Length: 133
Image (cartoon, rainbow, N blue to C red; front, top):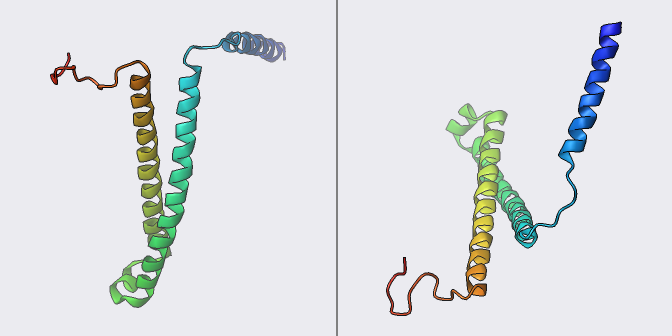
């Protein structure tokens, strides 16, 4: 009994020490606007991906289920699990593709806005039309 109580106390003290070490003082970072922009773009990507997944679900479910009932090969080889697998793969692919494209487009837009705000409107081209390195 004594060993278990000692171990419990040791873990309780260690947990408190870890909790105190993991909660630093609230600091404002100079990149807080960049972090907020990144969070907003990821949320926009999630919303766009969810919409695309819902549309892809309906667009894939109708032909898969109709084909599994009307086409003899599909009726013989596509059970309910296979139909669900096909539909979920299409929905998942649509979600990740659209979310990724949305986040990358937002990052590209924010990147160009950052360059324009720093006075580099030429985006890497020198005033002579030559590339600046």
